[in-house]
Image (cartoon, rainbow, N blue to C red):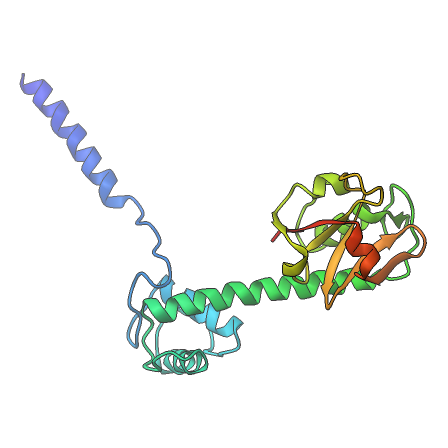
Amino acid sequence: MKKAFSVLAVLMLAVMMGLAVAPAAKAALGDTLLKVGSYGPDVSALQAKLNYLGYPVGKADGIFGNLTRHGVVSFQAANNLAADGIVGPLTANALNKAYAAQQRQDKVNAILATAKQYIGVRYQWGGSTPQTGFDCSGFTSYVFARNGITLPRMSRDQYTVGSPVSFSNLQPGDLVFFSFAKNGVVDHDGIYLGNGQFINASSSKGVTIYTMGPYWQSIFMGGRRVF
């Protein structure tokens, strides 16, 4: 009986020690009120996001000082928030949204810049590099891969990734899909540039930019947003 009690005591002690050293879940920015005097990884995340958004606060050292407060106040004032220099839920939510939007915009800009680098590259059925030439889906998959996004190789398979986007809701960076045969089967795609234009590897002109006029709209199958 005494031996059993000793074993049970050891097991309970081990469990308690395990709980004591278990790492705490990392709080999301906004879960904790941050102000001058705060410190730790949440402050580092705050500082990194402010720097990224153009509100310089110096090194993301995890210490909420006057420079960080100044950055917070500037962000709050620019976003119609109470400019008190304190990061509560409203400020954190606005900052997280602005950060995500800027990250997406930077990704869009990089993808479109990459795509435009290859204007004039010849068309090649089955081609997937600028050295060999591109077909339509070889071009889109190559451009996205250069920016860290993997797409299926074939246009009809690319049409299954991401989320669907209607013509009226297209945004730069969306993939646009067409059916030349008008039979509901995707057989061509490109990358939407904005202002009613898209870039693609055309069988007649190679990599080029087209306006989505009546013809292209008549064979438009849909868009996909993949990031």
